[in-house]
Image 1 (cartoon, rainbow, N blue to C red):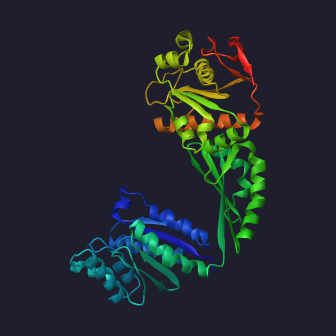
Image 2: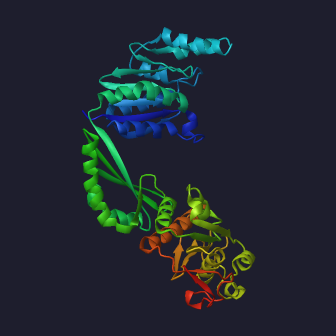
Length: 443
């Protein structure tokens, strides 16, 4: 029988959004590893009627239910009482659990409050899951062929109990495993990508293919179920080849690989150097790059020229360009890119200018308008974008877009350094053809 799991996270703080349910994500990932399909996540507050209703629904659609939270000593900790009542079982005192709780208080030179005894009460016939780190014991029981597990909500305690006692048991019973692989994409919309791989996204297909999106980065998830890891990987391999042939250069990496990681690898491979000049992104591109260990060998310099004065003073952007075209223009983006490349002596450079909002936009230049220029010794490439979202989202999308342009350029670069500028003042114009004929060193 296929194991279908439902995770019920209990606590008013979760329902009200005061804290994030990290337990649910952790448990889902662990269940998936042993071939258990997590199809439902439920959050309920500290109300007996709500948790009872959640259990009624869960037993109709899942054969493994894990409840996290509500095992404390206070009146609003209702999980053990509700599960016992739902299963028509009395709560009984577990001496092992009580001894553990008493030992914790003795170690702290404290007298155990009477209300902590409730934490040693578990439904009759249930198996205790000891808590070596706290006072909330867990338990598991069978109800009409359905397995119900209760663990405390404190993440550190729950994880230790699950890892040591629950997970090994699930592993020993597992007949299937689920293996996942992520292919990370950029430069294509979710709808356009979905059309290309729609025939692979049948929910009954093995491997199953799905997507997730964040700030323009689309991760294609290939998830295979099989008896062995080798069989699952074989299933994934065939589907991966087809997806790669359909999506081509939109795919930039796998798993947790980021655009900045790819840039680092390609810079190292080509033995090329990079510099950045940022306005609307406020140093975010440089921040992403410097999050990669070892990047200092290839990332030479990053300048945040947020004001017009800084663009003129630091990057030598001609004032007439700003007056004529505006700070947010392809001409200024190009001058920023060529300026920082000249100053740093890098092989490649990026210039970014735009309007992150929420104010500052006009009909001609709306919020979200961004120009990104990439300068090399051989070419000057500029692209126009119009992003939507909050200020932070626009900055993130612009930074990722800049890195993606650089990624695609590096993919075709020979890596051979033709020459190196030694002049310190960039061209007065906006294009590569206007660059002054300064002395160059052939390397």
